[in-house]
Length: 250
Ligand SMILES: Nc1ncnc2c1ncn2[C@@H]1O[C@H](COP(=O)(O)OP(=O)(O)O)[C@@H](O)[C@H]1O
Ligand SMILES: [Mg+2]
Image 1 (cartoon, rainbow, N blue to C red):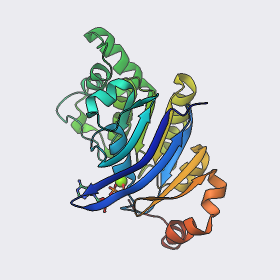
Image 2: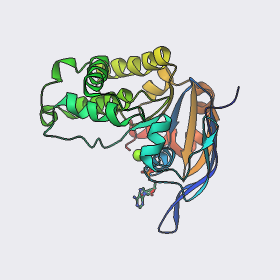
Image 3: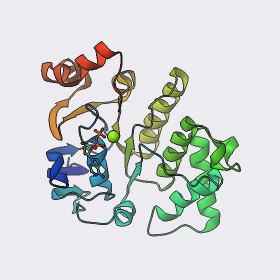
Image 4: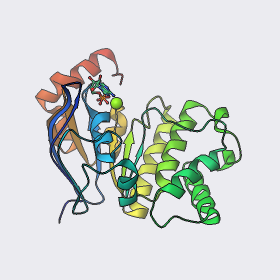
């Protein structure tokens, strides 16, 4: 099977310093891949390079058979990639529905009309459990709800590839279970492919089919969760620290 995403030699430099330093990665259609690694490893930068929000300095990103590395974010979005950001940028004074309608409206080239966009938004809000908040300004939502709103906004554009950046950070156990369920259901129902940055190991072990570890902008490991998480290099770079400190921050 041809991969849905094929990344080759991707680098992203900030002021000459590499944040992502030559990453190769293939992802098949329908896979759920967790991207883990210490704080500052380049995880968010890699996702932003894929989504076009901060284009790569060098390297190739092929999505569904076409090169997208140099395309602006809105074009990448139209090709079927959407991203939920680590630090959600929501429109505070707008309602939850209007926020998600923006995602629904700008997610594709065959722009839905207002009624259809509203329907798509309500469906996405219901899906993430925020149906009751549709008419309320986003300013009244707590951080966890804003993360779910960000997820709804990303899903409302009906992407083929969903990039999630720490959408589960700081959730309690019930919220965590619910969000794991949401991502799995979205994949199963829509045949989505998911790459998701995660620090919560419980979530990684329960949801990921494959784990990719970044360290200093480079790929340290790539494989089945149980295998990767016991890999000596990974334990040394990341998990050892996590276990000793009772968690990692990102
Ligand atoms: N916009 C930016 N300008 C300058 N440096 C940045 C920028 N974004 C990220 N970096 C740097 O790139 C490195 C990787 O950051 P990031 O991708 O956010 O890591 P992670 O998401 O794995 O914690 C860090 O050293 C960070 O300081
Ligand atoms: Mg990050």
